[in-house]
Image 1 (cartoon, rainbow, N blue to C red):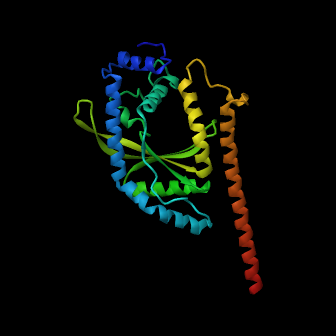
Image 2 (image 1 turned 180 degrees about the vertical axis):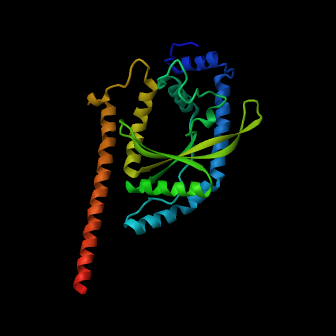
Image 3 (image 1 turned 90 degrees about the vertical axis):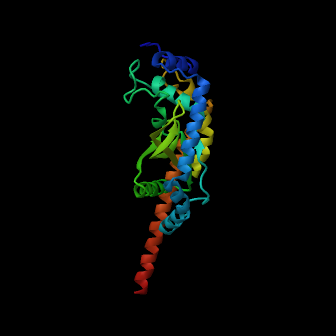
Amino acid sequence: MQTAKPTTIHEYVSWVRTEHGVTEKTRRLQNHFESVAARLKLSFELSAFWVQLKNNLRNFHEEYLLRTGYDLLQTFDAPLILTKPFNSFLLKTFRYNVLENGRWPDPPIDGWVLPHGWYSRIHDIVRTSLVVKYLDGVEFIISKLKTLSQENALHCEVSFEAREEGYYSAHFNVQQEVEIPRFDWDTERIQARFEIQVTTQLQAIIRRLLHKYYGERRARLRPDQGASKWQWDYKSDEFVTNYLGHILHYVEGMIMEVRGRQAKASASILATHDRREE
């Protein structure tokens, strides 16, 4: 096994071919990926889980409003379902297999992510996002997604991400069986995962700023470099956008604190009024 780590995406593609016997050229890998991604997207759009989610957005909003006195969603329109571009997908396998693989030259703990099995390993080929107004709305929506998964007998996983780059979001992955084309144009059934990111309006804004710099930073990371110390480069774009993400998350927490205090004050006033009437 070749032990030198690939340091560019071109070296990585060559490594996949020579070390793992992958004969398909990059163009064929891309065409096959796009065909599979389209099939996954259609399967998710037609699933009972997704149909029920779209139909219940207004109900979720009204339940949250009754419970808190605040709006949950800005719109009841179904969010767009997106597919991951092939180049981003390939880069993700590069990071997993090589750049972030602390076991190199051995495979990652869950094994190599390679073309003839990678569609069931990468969870965000098909993804969408739900944007809520307040921080507690994230967990509220996640609880509803879990219930929908249980009602449809689907396995799901949840992770609440908080990265040093100022990225905050809940990732909900739901799994279902899907039939996809193989490289020989036969078909196979796989367990595919679909990602729903749940975030707040403030974080959605900062994500647009962060996405470019976060993606570029991951793409240029090399095994011998380690993480760049953007925390000390106060003139950099990363310093501004990343710390802005942390600041906004703190502000959202303070908004929830103010809401809580207002609710307690209102409850106290009502209790006092009731006692006086007695």
